[in-house]
Image (cartoon, rainbow, N blue to C red; front, side, top):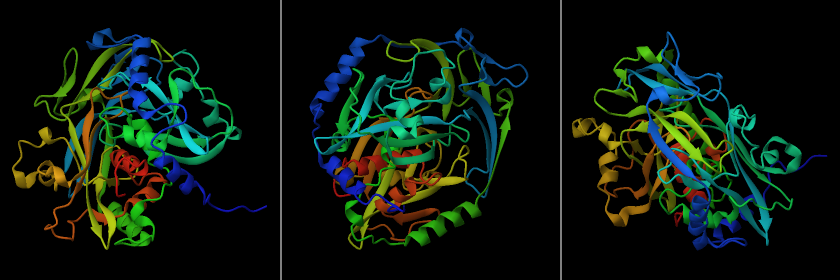
Length: 458
């Protein structure tokens, strides 16, 4: 028997959840206290340590790659990158190599007629405030197959057994292309009719509650944001499905951008990466720019394993990640950038208008700095539609934060963007985010804010 190809009612149900600013099980203003209570309930501690104190990790003889003795989890290696015609034609750098695909899964359930999402208070060693709202399941294959010999991952069965629920979204998505080599996670959202009593570290929240929490600094983690970006929520400006460019024109533009960039990425031994050196506690550049590799010892009473050591990547400064927005024909549009990153699987993905750490470019003449960065940094408060500081992936990055913004474009700026940039609607960006290798993780954070109602007028 045939069935409808799409669930036409799902966008309406998600819109109803996004409009619900309070949930059936926990008030929004009670989330902060619940997180504080969970922080008090467990012992959490993260200390920097020298590489010599890493347990189970070593610099491999010959290559100098930083690897785990099991051969699992991840490694820190080197890459050499060549971008023909790019502003920086070639460079070398350390990079995280983690070929296994993890699961980022959020469980949904209709409660009192409104979709709720089971969110976890999860500790990640790299988070500035340690504990943030995470997906129901956030686990690498090494984690959920218990290579670490830890406890079971709660609620995992809903994401590995298709009979346990209805899939609402499911897509392989990239992670940070500047710091990961071809890393992807399965972003999946599953609805269940089961009676699922939440563990004390989990709570049911509406999409609207999550949207309100996304207005706060460092509260909703990156993994939650990337999953929520894949939801088929209707955008206010897309009710008539009108845009400056048709969907076919957009896809053609992306294809042309990928075809015009020649990118070669070669794996290198970490010990031979040019311009980087190793000390007893860091792998870093002499000028201190971009990032460094460090080591930490972790205690986490609520995790499947309660203590471990590991390497982390520590950025050299806080990032600035922003979309410029303007109305074209009365419809909100975002200025996307076809951004090449060394670790992406498919040359480039759509990124925000601005995605940079200003400290890394402060030594350059203003004309050589990234396009639109000065406009975003100088934006008057009245032009800022959204602003919050969010942590990046706390399981691999230490104190990695970005200031996320959506900024009204200068009305006097030329309507035609420079090469590599295009005005598209939030609905077009959302449609691409439901497919792999189109929208990068930073753009998905801002899309999650739009999907959840954190930003009015979208």
